[in-house]
Image (tube, one colour):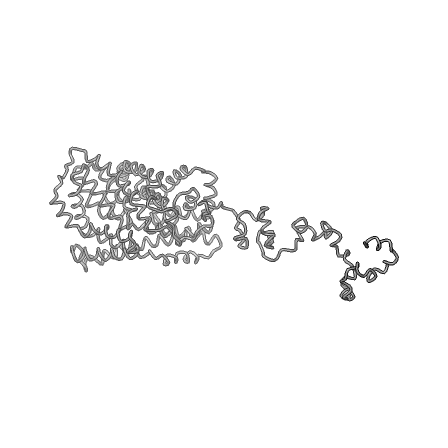
Length: 562
């Protein structure tokens, strides 16, 4: 298996597609483990059981329609009219617009490609520093990954079996915090006297808002319908795609139904195909890791090395930051979540809190030098040296680290809307490891603990070998064999326990008086003549009936008479 990993690692460094590397690891693992390669296909086929799968092409199609239409220009105009009077107003407009589009496409790289050509020239024209403008456009897109109706939130909810609606609610405040810290940089940059401010004009703001009203209202009614449970997420995705199609094709007429629509549909479905291929390959690898009990081994190792929840959260952030640099968010969710969820549960971290930490780290990893994917996308899109993008991104990465620390160590920021004990649902497309089964106190059972036999359910909660449980088993006539399995009604009559509750099983004379011994009974008690009427009469009335020697001892008989 190590050789397979090394070969695939070399292929990855040579530029092999990510899905090929991931599926190659899964295939090699299954085959070396003695399982047929067809099992990988069986694991991938579980994708069809994912009822939220349809949301991926629908939201992606809606996002592409918005990006290819005049929506970015209209949204920039309304944002400038509303926020242009604030220091750094155009930078705030860029931040909000990029986050808005990423919520629909689910990929910040697409936002950089689609909107970068529009927003970067405007920022430079307004007088903003080039490195600041590059860093802002590069990092702003990933800010929208935790807002509804973000695709990564949907995928995470299904993989981790967490309620998607509650995830959407939980992501709003952390997402606003992440936007706020970048807004601080924007305001600071806007303090430059060379950058002009646009005075607030109510008439111009109303006009711009009216022009973009159908697009401004889209996230409002969409989020409201999802959070109020009027529509489920797949239904909301279908409504959003239809709504955007009608608005952009038939109302604004920015997209020609014959010349533009087929091209946009093809491009959006190419992205969906790439996402689904990566998801399938990642699903096969994730289930291979579970079969090899990798989560159990990680739980055992981390439990022995780390005892503090705060230290674990620090290590988790570092690990997820590296993952965000190396993997796209969809494959990272499918592969990594089954590994870290048992650990987080053991340290008492709420599943929804873990989800927000995970998504914020992946956002940050996209923009972190030296291998953040958005840095390379921006370098290609804007034709700038990669080291210049590194310098441009560092201030934004530092501010995002501050936001991440706040969300990580102040759990109520993401869980204040979740009632106690809520947020987890049944299901999920990843095979669940055996260790992450929480006990009554919310703690995980330690790996390696033997499973209790079903026959002991409801009898005793402790170890079957404890004295209290032994007594209960004896009372119910249950015997445990050498393997610890119990069978009812097969326990011998205390043959193996001479000192148990029936000590007379082997020693009938141990505690019983001689009067109860079998030889103490009168031999004539069961003889036929014992049933005669005079057999039951007391000897005092007929001394000669059964005692012929009464005549020989007149002293004894006379002594008993009055």
